[in-house]
Image (tube, rainbow, N blue to C red; front, side):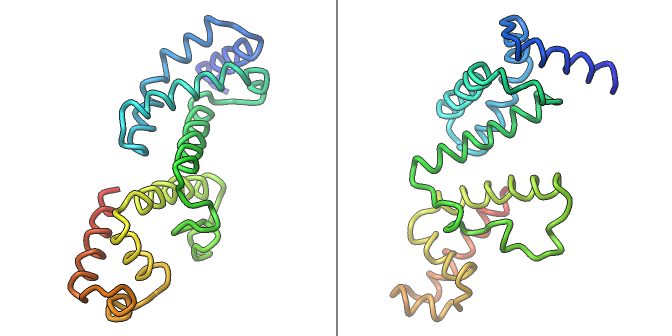
Length: 180
């Protein structure tokens, strides 16, 4: 373990024992990173600030479980990701079984080591959040195309839209996803 890792492990141990000073240290060191990360996911500064505060409040409340944590930064980002997921669940974001994409329906070639799978889960969260925030008609058309595998003509017949409108919604949805 390097010196920095050793110092962080000591700080985490001290935080687990209730050190306010160490809590302040971690807050000053990581709060802006956590808030920036959350802002990317929720696209709302005040919501990101609230979620960031909640994450740090939860760190303090559950400090006794930190003894097994080796990296505060990684732990904070996992907590932040989970807090964002909870935020979207409360707002009516689809539950895991109904999500547009899940790790379980990825091809085996994309499933790998644990870190890669965690990265894929993070990316899928971004995709699912982006799809859930699309205007209703665009989301419906996009899901019918990409999730259900319908052709544009079938989608047009099912929704009562013209094929050009279906193409428009799909291209707009794909452009929105490419911006990720």
